[in-house]
Image (cartoon, rainbow, N blue to C red):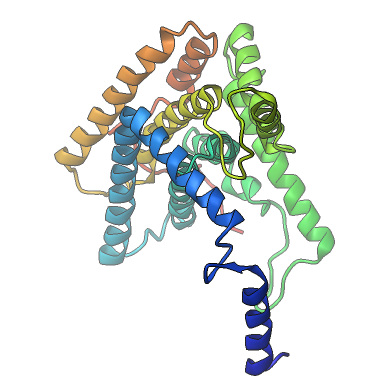
Length: 323
């Protein structure tokens, strides 16, 4: 292992080679950072309603997470619901992923934020599946019918492959029940939701949407100067904005599920949830007016599969045991 002097010498060499004006990355990287600030600022100014609604949702999301954490620490974690703590951590992961996508969009990277939304969708689908008792935690995390792991040991490679396969199977079952053949949604709605899902893959795999946008920007007469940083594009912004509205509304509908059944009644919390739900309804009306087929398809899925509200609380599937 290198000693302190060797590490400093290595760092000094990098600084001497790549510093500009005394700052590492101060020339070309800095140009990208400057563009991020400019494009991101324009995005936030243009979509002020999105910023207010999204930050309001995340404030409420964070408040609910904090209140549940405080309740658990005050009266103890529920002993008869072994998966509750895991569910709460799943919600925390959703919060952080939504926030990460927003940070990207606020810095001009709308399509990169759009790619992250695929992960948000998958997280929300799993939580929706648990809340609707479509699949057990054991299957969704690959524990079902797996041997107990001894302290200080882990599963071997083959066992890890089995858990991964089991997780994929559980996720597939939930997708089928939420938006595909076992969903009771119309064939037309299923087809539109499948296109909605496939479009995520264009950016998730190989960043093809970003590639096409970059190619257009470099050959379009509007752009005379090569940019390392992001380029503002109305289509990219709209794709992120529309998916953000949909996914955030799904997240809001699920938030009550993180609360234990013995959570004290809180009228202020309930009123905040209702205000946010009404606000997403208001925003969605504008989306419907665009005439896109995904709007009624999404709404049908939301009302049939994400039918949760202030009276919803966490519950486990009967008889499930933690592995």
